[in-house]
Image (cartoon, rainbow, N blue to C red):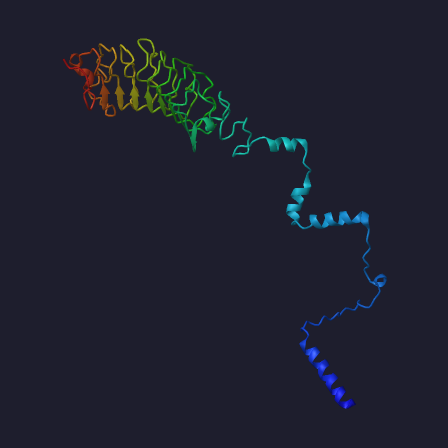
Length: 316
């Protein structure tokens, strides 16, 4: 009987063990497992005063050394805060400086916000400007048509040594300083048509294209020999100015001369040609417009003998 009971209990214990969940066996395999805390080779010493510094040290060393140096090299000063609060332009300069957006205009905006800047070209057409805005130093082409500009001052284009084209069509310009354009040694094209100009300023010798049509130059608006030294000038347009003469001498480089709708009444035989040199040929000058003037071109036939084409105008 006792044997039977022992067998029954053994079977019951076996079934209980088999029904229990199976877990991984945790093995504490450490040479320090049975060593008291105070006998460890590097005991951990808790110090409440040093704990925060150690945490900061761990956070600080989480960054790579180079970045760590950038952040820790200099604390934020008042000057740094001021610089951070000042808007920067894309070239790193202040909005009050002369960066790529230009100096501030009278409207309180940099030129390239008030106008449109594409590369080195500045478009200020139809912006109701009453003065030439401050331009970025590298400006090459400047357009300011259909505005209310009345005056061109001496320093409006000062130090803009890259300027190649200026177009001020359809403004109210009546006064231009004599040296406003003369110092622009890269300027090739100057368009001043449809203004109120009474006196043509000094011009740079680099010009290839000049249009001062529809102004008020009259009899005295163009000084003597104004175009003599413009050895690269190819196109000269002075229509609708009430001129009473053809401004001489004209450079040999000239290809087109438009003088229509003026008050020119006479022409000399040496206006375009050389009176005593019948072998002289002026091949470049192919386009001369004198229509709309009270002049009879048939009275001076020798004036055109050296030209490849006759001028356009009244022959009766």
